[in-house]
Image (cartoon, rainbow, N blue to C red; front, side):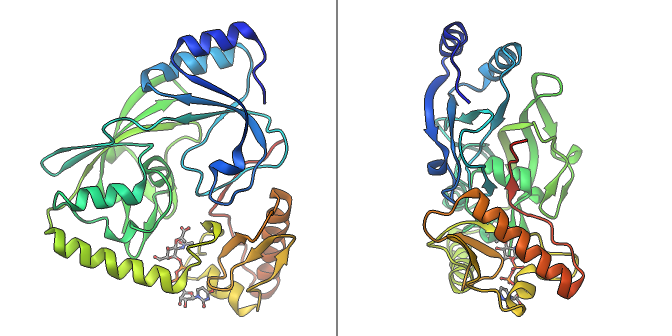
Length: 303
Ligand code: EPU
């Protein structure tokens, strides 16, 4: 969606928010799928309430995009103005075992920055792509670790109140790839409490996780990680594999040959290709196993 009202643009820019016109959002996602829209880059968190107030007043639908690694955007001109946080400097600040992290920071880089301070616990998350904010929203997890375990406080913009608030870790439910954050909450920063561990030990854990991941996941391809959640007690990847669907494709959207729950963009896949592949695989799994797979990737639907 384009912002064309010069008064609105002037008010947005006066807040110190950067207005980029007609951005190709495929470049902002790990799947490299998505159409175009105006993008607003927020440099100072405290300007968010006023920015969103302005957009609401102007009746401009808007959506917030995080690291773009677990999302499938629609094709064409998007019906929303897109908001994104600029990275803060510094991204990470330490106070003993407490770590204050900017939500636009990269998850993997944060894990290694903490490791250098002899703070561990998050080794399993090392290869999970995306930002800290995205990891919080989805309660990112791998190899027995989930980020929610270490969360003590989160600073969020709450659309419900139009204010920036601090939530205590104990007030937030962290479940398997699901949290109690509202859909329109925007995570700004987090305080994690991490256990002390020698750097060498953390590094060893990181190496093991990296090896496991390299062996089983298509890391150098355009994907959004696992496309479906695992059903209770089951494995989406194993079921899709057993159905012989590795390499199955719709256009350039393809089930990975390496891990059947990773759907990759093998060229110039459209959102329509990827959605058709998701629907097809879901249908086949339903037919064979009687299991209704739920998407793990967040699909933005243009109504
Ligand atoms: N399997 C197959 N064929 C495949 C893929 C997997 O037979 O093509 C089998 C494996 O051999 C294994 C079982 O299925 O016995 C489970 O596979 P894996 O260990 O690879 O883990 P997963 O359950 O498929 C989950 C997370 C991953 C996370 C890994 C490692 C979900 C949906 N997936 O995958 O997270 O990296 O465990 O902890 O929870 C993500 O969230 O995007 C993601 C990739």
